Length: 586
Image 1 (cartoon, one colour):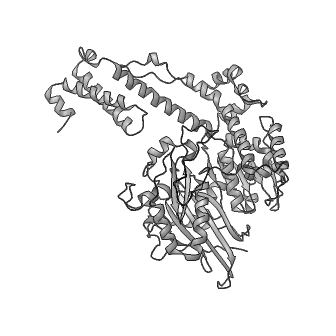
Image 2 (cartoon, rainbow, N blue to C red):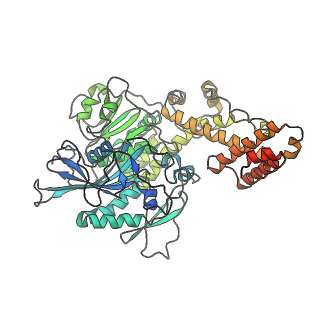
Image 3 (spheres, one colour):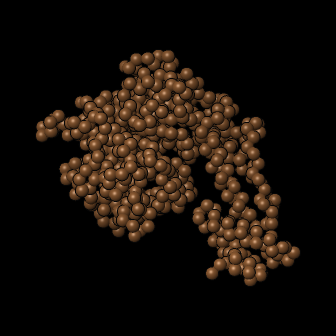
């Protein structure tokens, strides 16, 4: 069934519709509990309804809450991304997700409680600073009361949190009810979400919605990766909660079933930030596979761009498909075979066939040369000239195949696959972490009255030499060209992202150690032979450190903060009255 697209989405109308504006973001909302929709804002940006209009094509019917403002470009993107394209032929109900760039100026990075949340959340689960994530429930069913004979509508949750499992579960409860009862139901649901507690990393939350309680645990940066903490006691909860084991983890085995023999090659491509197109038969398959690929580097943060579902109508289509420069570091999920022709110059294209949900393992896609990627009816395969640096783990494939034969539950198969990818990533990263730690100045060299010493520079040759005695071979049995993989990794966005994050954390640690050294020193003895200029300079520097620490940029103990403030008061008290008045104005 084709879904024609008109000249563009119309403006949302109606009492719950969007305020017409060209500025991006939520108007007059700061995230304090007294502000309307503050709790809602901690989870979602807005809820959109996209319908099919016979004259206009996809149309934005509703945005809720009504004070959320979207630019015209954002409205257009949501409309096109909320519907499968005409090649997918999705009948019935389909769930998928997309990711789109915010337009009209980037909102403040620390919107609402972003800083508090991001400091505690795993890097991969931090809020998106410059993109919206859309979670879609699309319904297309026969309806004789409609001119074209089909009811076509999408309910879209727009968020900056990558909680795909939670929001898909939420949609499966909300959307069927909404399609029956329409606006009043949606308003009630949004009011319920506005009563939810904020997503605090490390906490288990009970989220009531439409007579059901969803219980989730928000992951924390200090969690052990292999054994997620148990959910809290449920005895006193009525109704009994629906427990989600994860807010974000997908069924990796289901996503990777057709490409299991190439999982390690795909892991290398992700690690190196290589451009990759995933051509799938439908947006649910493309979006899940792209999200699975971008998650397989955890605990590393995926630092490249990715689009779980991308269409030719996207405002960034020309930018991402241009031939005038090298393909960008992005993973694109598409369903339109037109992209085969448009992106022939891309180095890696993964073509996935129709999913088969039988118990047997589907036919595995084969490695093929990019030169064979010429026709719109291209057969399934991984079209690339890339040669993997590491040897394939045949033992893993045997275990997964044995699990298929024994009808092992898919969640167990996914756990095996996730653990393998986690251990592979950790084996790769641990030598880098050890080397980076060696660049940190020794604590004995940090003295209170001198600027803290600098972090030593990262020298790639020195690191590569260290691998002979402290390389990945200590924790991983896989053989191969690890050196070659590291050399290519140094040129990737993921090395840059990892290094910047680690350097920032180390610099902060240095500042904390320096502040602690000052607080442990005898400040009165230091002041005896110092000029007023030097004393005032110390006051200003200590104040600056306190401001940074109290704004959550430095992980300082409370007792250190109190001691620093006491030192500031002591130092100011030793100065003449006129200087005291300048440093402590009434």
